[in-house]
Amino acid sequence: MYVCICNAIREKDLRAAARCCRDGAEDLYARLGRTPQCRQCLDEADHIVAEERALACCPA
Image 1 (cartoon, rainbow, N blue to C red):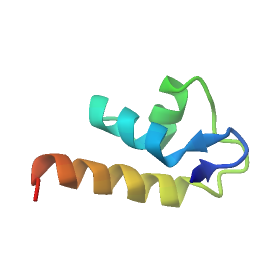
Image 2: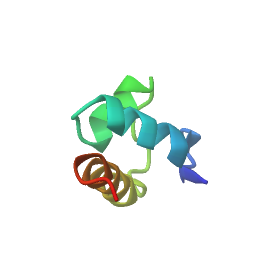
Image 3: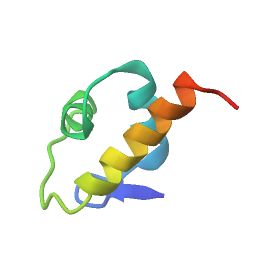
């Protein structure tokens, strides 16, 4: 699934970046070589990043 249509950032790529870095969504976009355009995706991106980090801290 695409999280950011403007930059073609997929959820799996954002999750992988979140596992490697402790940055927020905007910083992770930069690590992926992109910048937020319309910014409508950032709330969802932040949610995905937080979810991924919670899973990493407390695996089921």
